Length: 136
Image (cartoon, rainbow, N blue to C red; front, side, top):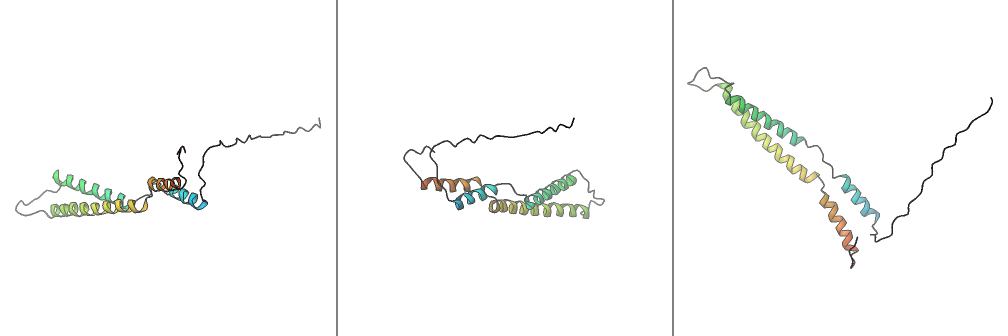
């Protein structure tokens, strides 16, 4: 029983040739530019957006607390300091949340690449190689 057994494994690949047809020759730098643009289409986290909605939520919850009478006034002849502070919190959080949401929108316009940028570059390449049939 000194017999040695061996296992042989192999995997064969059949390479399929590409179909023939019309193609655009494209420079490597144009291809790399398109790859970079497609790679940057993702949604990036925007801290201004988060802060803006957080402050808007604080504003709304303070307004609800004011309307439900959570800040009672022991002396009806004067303003309650708690109520004045609550309305100040509402005003400040509302204004700051609007400013943060505005900055979030502007930042997303500047930082985010759009698919239209990539499409415009691809159309530029297509125009360079325009032909009569346009079957590509």
